[in-house]
Image 1 (cartoon, rainbow, N blue to C red):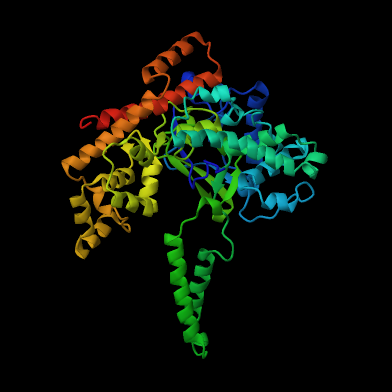
Image 2 (cartoon, rainbow, N blue to C red):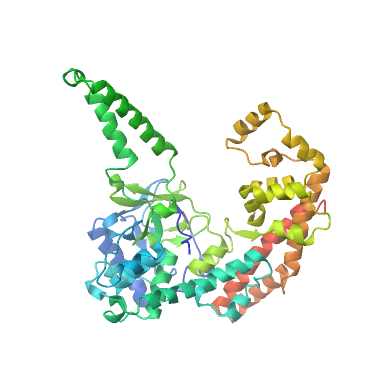
Amino acid sequence: MCNRRTSLSILISVLLTTVEAQIQTAEECPAGAAQCDAVPELLSWAAAHGAQCDRLQTDNTLAIRGLRATTDIPGGSVIVSLPRSLALSVSPSQSCPILHLIPEDVWSSSIKNFQLALLFLAESKKGRDSAWYPYIQTLPQHVDSLVHWSDTELHELQYGATEPEQQFLQEAKQQLDDIRELYWKLESSGLVTELNSTLEDVVWASDIVRSRAFAISTPEGWLSPKSIGIAAFMANVVLRIPVFSQWQATKRIISIARSVTFMCIGAILFGTQHVGNMDLALLPVIDSINHNSSSLGHLQPGGGGTTVEAVIGPDGAQAFQEVTAAYATASNEVLLQHYGFVDMDNAHDEYTANILSFIEENVIDQPNEEQLQDVYASPVLKSSLSQAKLTSQGWSTETVTALRFLLASEEESRAAKSLLPLRWVTQVVKYRQLPTPGYVFKEAQSHATETRVDQVLSSMCRDISKSKPTSLGDDETALAQLQQTNSATYRRKLALQFRIGYKSLLNKCILQHNISS
């Protein structure tokens, strides 16, 4: 289970939201009075422990979360600076910090989401004795994610006609099975026997982590590229002083130090910190910011790694506007599965389809066998077609490129394979990456090939749309009626919003590629 909030950045900006918009995109159902009253105490507690958030205040008219600006905030400003000591976190390869409650073998065999959930649950069981008690008091007692939906309610999503849809539903059901397995391993642990933690407690803690945790940069130690590089650079400078330059080994040490310096610079400039190598943390105050997919901004380390800073987007904020955040580039699948809500205006929504499977099962005029084998032999081409992403902007460049490669005529295929080295170099320079076997097909091909591409994409989207019990128009009408009568359950409304989202993407695909079909 990958925590889909595990991105290097949280995007932050502002907008003036209405009550209706909050109902549509609220991360959880509206909070109880006790939780809302605890939020101002959270800000006071955080400030007393070194957090800087004095330009924000709570707004109890919003959902369970909600912060707004108290004054005008310029774009690019730090709106929350949180000491890392206030972040409840786990690090990669960290040994169990509560061995008296959780066996090391259970801890080490668990994913980071579960490790943080167990650590958080242990803290919550302390009650007022927990250092994070003011924060824990603000958290919801229930997060209505897909883990809690029945089979009947999941059926309302009208998902399951394709392999990626089935995989999505299986992942939703598997989450609860994984939590049950974890609890079974903990039955004789102190967390259960001493603190009386139940399966429902572990499910709740997992829900909190799944819906609120962030991936943040691990504090740099003495063995980080930056620290080693600085030390090597200083050695290179110091050893050039006359008093040291006379040493016999000075020249050799300077040469080594210079090489190490350049290697560290390269590691800093070109290195990538993957989510799996980052800390997973619950961040008080920062996670009280509501979601909006169009927000811009980011998280960054501050104070030499001693703080986590939330930076507002370039538009800044006016006084009394709500400060919002986009949970990375999360699709509605991710938002519904992990956070329990759908964003009707989600700029990052996407639909996953297996184009390769559709071609093999439905296209009469099958591709050339050699080209099909080439696709299966290339992980990039294969994944671009078997896990193709459809967004509001259409299919990704990688997917269209792979599809052209697969459907190209034999003449186009032979021409691509016989490219002169000069053109190969030109393509590398143009696209700034090592080319895949089908890199030439980034450019439009013959009319016949482009027509076949359009036919496959429009036919697939049309077939998927026809497999649904209701149309896009039916769902839009049903949602409008439910909102007028207020007779819908929360999950029924979410199901309709979710269906409208992915059916809108399919409909755009049909219209975009229908000219040649």
